[in-house]
Image 1 (cartoon, rainbow, N blue to C red):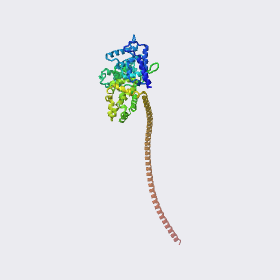
Image 2: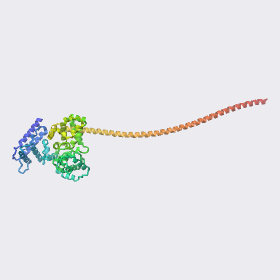
Image 3: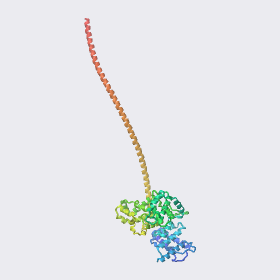
Length: 523
């Protein structure tokens, strides 16, 4: 497959060469030649999409593929206009002692595609792979603003009236505006554009951020957004241009062409990094941590041992598109790639490349503070590149085949699956906690009832004991009285018995006396 892809790439290059007239040519372009150029570009783009590594020498993509030719008499040919600019570049190069430089090649290429993209919204996406290769080489500063706007599919003119209305409703006294005002002086404080409180740069930055906060109430303003917008203004964008590009960077879906529904705008989806719950940031940090685990296992083990998490160091990278930590020259190149390839994949690749290059340095460190100091200071972190910004970009190419959409999709799926499981477990735990809380409440009520019952029983028992005691005392008293009365009765009975005995004795005596007397009388 790779040989076939390389063959297709070679065929495409041959096709470009076949269409390229000699320099300083006065050939007039025809519709057929323009169609051939587009066809050749499409062939090259298809080859790159099939096998991005087929073209390793970017000099193959020199602008002479596009064959400098003169404009038609009425200047109606887009190719002719590009050829005119290219001819001017060649003349300037001659005066500098050079006939063909990469800078001229890049400038002419982007000028051409920008012109074509004005009338064909699908143009840039049609040559997406080719654009990526060109952007990796670097976007010339002279056309960088226009290229970023085009790659972002932003439409400043369409947003002009909306922006004016948002600015008109700004209030410097609202909490959002006060937060923005507080953060702006901390954004590139040494840059000439922002170092003075009354500078036009600070005013423009305030206006763009305030307008967006009013434009997207749910997102509003979040610390870090100043570093996303400021580089746009530094490049020379007007407020409306910066605002329209910023809106596109934040949007979670791209626009589609009216007829076929084909998506013609790339989705950057930075918004979810800044909404209140920051779901996008959590996912991005998880993806980064997983990539470190998969691609840099030794570093992952060290970070885990030291207690260093992605949140500790990578959050400022992602929330500012590296503008808080990295020099502007590198940030500009990172933004080139973000607009061309998408924000998430580029940020992840940059983060892994930086860690990978510093892994030998981290291996010599054994404490949390030393590692974190390197991670948070770009001077040391980027020292391994020795100031070579393009070296960073070239390193990204070494992991393109590893960090791809399929891998990121797998990591995302596992993240959301785990999140769903965690959410389900959390729901079950919450349900159990609610049940336990209800049972605890019931137990508390039963405990109160038990205490009340115990108190009642104690009271009843106390009353019962008292009653029994009183009864006992009463019975004992009555018994004592009865025994006393019985004793008296016994004494009375004993006296009566004695008296009876005495009476019997007396009666017996009397009977004896009477007998004696009767006997005596008889005589």
